[in-house]
Length: 165
Length: 127
Image 1 (spheres, rainbow over the protein chains, first blue to last red):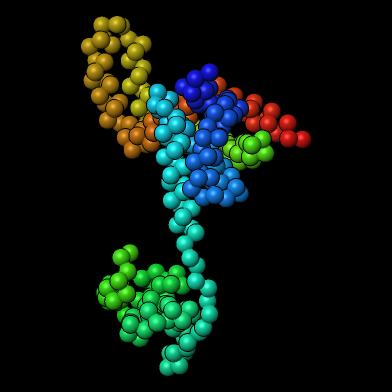
Image 2 (cartoon, rainbow over the protein chains, first blue to last red; image 1 turned 90 degrees about the vertical axis):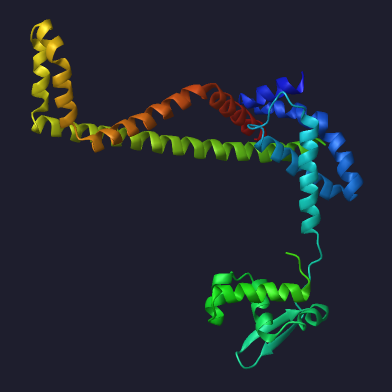
């Protein structure tokens, strides 16, 4: 059975035919992922996501096109997401409280604290709120300043910290 | 590999079952509401036309063919002027939605049938 026939079958609702595609491309994708990650469990998790995403997008997939490049494109995207998730996470360590206003300015590692010392107090407050998931509108409301001012503070702070995005 | 394959299929079948249920549920709701809307609007329109005695215009069809031929467009135009357009638009809109749902279900009937059959078989296999 060709890939085209299998995809047409799946598109007509016969989900069990997806087994053919899994069997055909499993080892190829597994080898590729293992070469990149070198961890069996994580490879399997990614493989699950790749095949699941492929199934979810099968409706839009043109059966006349080859399956392999499409699967590898999904695999590359999944790998990118995987690497993004694996970025270093800095745990909370030390709290420095601004006694005047009574709210926390820092909850960072010393290294991060040093970086943030480049900022002014107002900028530190805005960045701290940003880090805690506040939106620009909410920050403006909390600090009783205009939204545009918050945006300017963020922009200025980013330049100081040399953050691109 | 067998174990992983099972996991992938479990994920797919659960997702498909959930999607199918939501799809059916939405289609039934839209189907019923458009039917109800069509029925209510039709009833209102009918009552309005009855009140306006617009249906009297249709009685000229009982006349001779020559008379019907001569006055057909005049009568039709008057009848058209008397119909509340706003209601008519909504009536056709609800009819359109109603028919679209029916056509969509008929068009995808085999897909639904196959999917339900496959999901049912898979769930039986799991027990």
